Picture 1 (tube, helix red, strand yellow):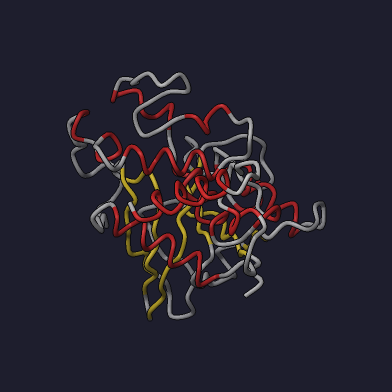
Picture 2 (cartoon, rainbow, N blue to C red):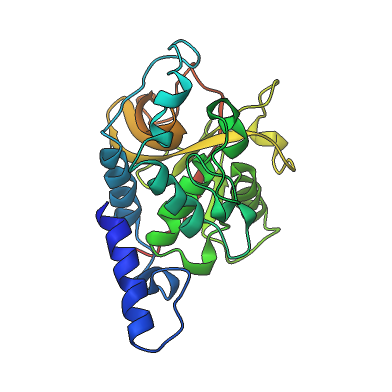
Length: 255
């Protein structure tokens, strides 16, 4: 909980100094340092460790789900972390910014089997990008389709000044710091379908690369921050039959 403590201390110091307390830590709002690939990787990795370093390389749906009240996101110390992802990841005014891993916007505990309505994987990515120094250049959102579509609009020349750029997984090899995204529609989307309005998806951040494999970390995987290993070809292209990966978001870091 070191990050939570740092956030609370920063807010307290701002109040003591007689300046209005910011919604975000000053180092992320200004930001203090250039948007950093190393920072994004370190932040995602630290959050994974905070959840106990879970790894899930099983095909989707092949592992029995935990009992509802045993979900990590609902446990003490973890539901609060998910609340930080919502609060710091989203822009001011978003209703979801008041959620936690087990509370709705009114602070009521929602049923554990309703957690699909409170999926926090996009909030986790947004949180990582904000703390890594993206400032106003990342399209923070509660759903992955927002920054996937914005990234494709960038690569089509229809949008400007965003730090995301869509690449086809058929021709671009992801590197650490990039996002890889899988379609969750009944008929999987392809890169050619983008931009595609609203659609369900999931994105992970690449944190390490080795011959034949990527290490990727995502939020709300098994109700936790979880790592999985994604096979790639000798050229580094995604080669994973478990998931319909359909776009790589090349994040345009400053450093």
